[in-house]
Length: 164
Image (cartoon, rainbow, N blue to C red; front, side, top):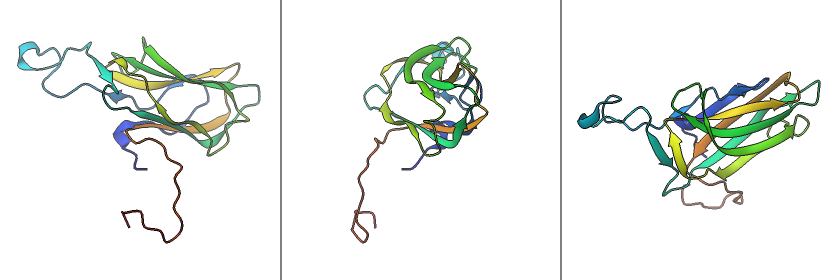
């Protein structure tokens, strides 16, 4: 799968305490400066129906094992807001709830092509990582959006796929 860096929320981001994704996706269409009115620019509080018409898939992968001295768990939510810090965000979907550190080894998929819900998303879209009970000592996560669904399809060695 090809991953578009502009659709990445986290690229091996360290998750040790409550935080938001390193990257937020700006879904504001181009066409003029903010509040340009009649000149074609969008307003600052623009909302869009993200994934309307064509599904978008969310992928979240543990890249370095999550380690906790206590009983830390992780919850991840997809959010949007009118600012990049997601300080007053609207939650659109809780992706995972209270996953334990023991479960999150390197290579573990927290989301493997989950379809994100359609709806009115504000300008900035990101993920909120919430540590429950206690914080993690170490652990990294990568997360991104794609318009390509996950497939476990495998090909035999030497078979033709149409792209060889």
